[in-house]
Image (cartoon, rainbow over all chains, first blue to last red; front, side, top):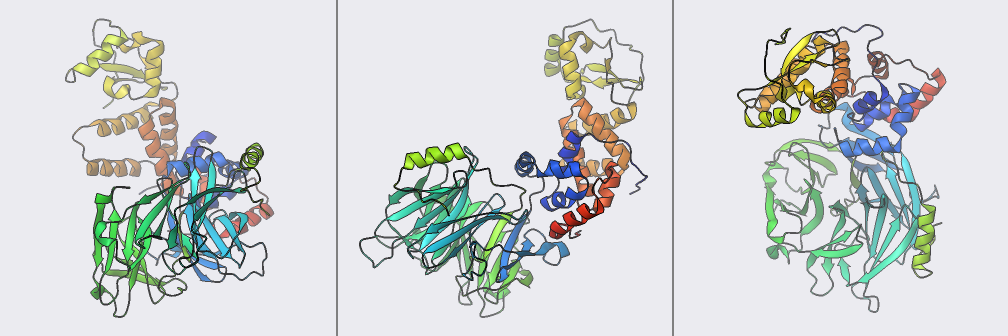
Length: 393
Length: 184
């Protein structure tokens, strides 16, 4: 390819065309080119630019963030082999608690439009942080808590341009008198919590206190146990309508207890089963959202592809249909869609079999959180009166 | 491909509306529009292709008589060199038999033959003509060229003067250090 490259290159492009070109760059290139000149800096720092860039999605890049040790994480590109230099970055994790000496464990409990929701629970307060790892933008808030298991997630309400954090506290099975499931929502626009609803009880699916919610079609999803009957069920909280609903599991899975996780894979809800030496990893995908008959057994990964005494826990699909997952030697593994091992990389620590909340997936974005709407704040406070709103900090 | 012509056609004058109707019905007997570039070269272009140009549509809305090939539609900001390329692109992408692979191959070859100046000239022309498909293709292609390049390359490519002081620039690079990792 012959390129003549003289100085300076005529013609000069007007700014609106430069913008069209910048909109088609991946996030990290845009960030790097902020120091080309001052007008590029102001252009790419404009929230409207960030929005157009996100919506156009010309080169969306997805990353997996894995905590390697306290307050340090490694971030790897999902669609590129780990060997590429670019694929892995080291990122400092901001602590949700304003107290820097705080050493409570940080969990990733949600992901939405380039933001990760981090949580750190003390004995009476949960500290939250909405964080965009690409731009380092962050926002802190907290919630008083009474040591009940909770589900968490973050969603986007496009009607009000608001990021909504959902926290659902679950009753403990053997403690009577506290049967309800309480739903709380935090609006980043009003900067406050509002108490939404007390619904039928559900029971935490595993022994973990916190549970990561998966965002799909405007609703956050979790796997729980029904209180009566104790069978697994998926619940979905619609962020715009503020409504909780149930999504049925495939009938023949209803009493299987070895489901380890509900995941978003290839933009579908996916139930994952651990693959041990004794049996293969299995995945069920709900191909059509909320259609029970569309649950399909998708993959059975043969255990022979993998060393003995290992399990494989799928995390996501890559663009080319490979499967990314973890094994019990704390290793991030990339498998061919037929199950052959392509590559693996030690990517931080794992605590026990079920402990995967230390990794979060996000699509890189330049988005910032919308400004706090003071009028809206006042109205919301008045509406909910004294009963439900906890002031924040 | 491009014919420099004095119009030899003697079609009766028609209103633009009739002309459009005819376009929809008869494909074999395709009508043509006369376009004149900034360097005063006249092109007879298939109406089905010329009507993809927003600038041509707009012109015809204002003066529908020009759809009869007697008068040339002036394209003030497009030189013949660019129009030839644009027509080449649209004829290929308009061709019904072109498969996805053919188009991909064509696009690659099309880009290969352009140097950076030509690429930018073509983008300016595509913007003036208001041809969305080509405009998107070119902006995407330029983005692909620069995405993994360093800041100096980008400044040269666009002819931009660095208006940061060395201290400001250093501070900025530090801040975005992890985005500055060079990757291929």
